[in-house]
Image (cartoon, rainbow, N blue to C red; front, side):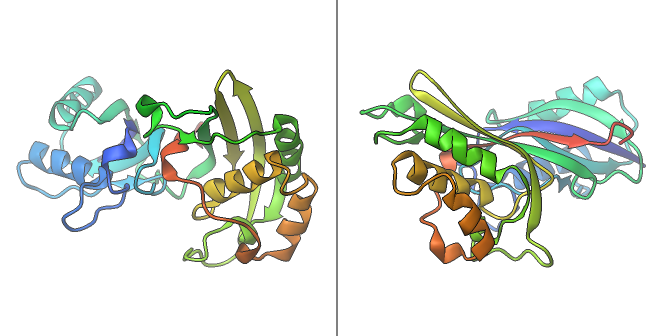
Amino acid sequence: MVRLKCIINYDGSQFSGFQIQPKKRTVQGALETALTKMHKGEYIRIQASGRTDTGVHAKGQTIHFDSAYDIPLYNWKQALNTLLPNDLYVKEVEYADDSFHARYDVIEKEYRYYVWHESEPDVFKRNYAYYFPYELDIRSIQAACDYLEGTHDFTTFSSAKATTKGTKERTLYQVSCEKRGSEIEFIFRGSGFLYNMVRIIVGVLLDIGQGRRQPADIMDLLAKRDRRLVGETVPSEGLYLWNVRYDEKR
């Protein structure tokens, strides 16, 4: 048996999330169907760096699976992409150590969130950025980003539906916001993320940009550890799993 590690891209707008679900079109389902065809009906299970919700996109999702087939890496990539739908693409395939695990060996993830900041919507961006027509103070948002960097308990910024056991402490290495033309890009790099954490944080940052909160309010929200203190989770279409990092030896 060999263990293969793949980096995949997908447009999440037509998927009901990553995790396999009965009678739903999912990323995991599409990948496992393709692998099963390649293995002449033998079920091949994949493991991913993490799940993404309905509508969330990925530029650098990582998966692994085991196979008894010994074929060149290029052929793996070509065969899988021939069998996969055109909104899901295997970008890289490489061999991994038998002990490698796509989820448990992650040392850093990067998410990006895009906002289309214009008075009128762009129908061609409706599945790929959150349309937000209201006035924003980008400098206030940037000031608030600084408070989020570092190690904190992010309970306030985690969905009440989260099933995470243990600590909700996470370390964010980078939280940034830049506006280029009509597009606002948020970047989040961290050791790990709680369920809906990025989308909840973006919602609070947009509140700060509108003057509904002050940048320093972030510290109070972190300290109180109460999801009820912040507003709704922003939509999924602006969110991208951008990159997943592992130890170089992995």
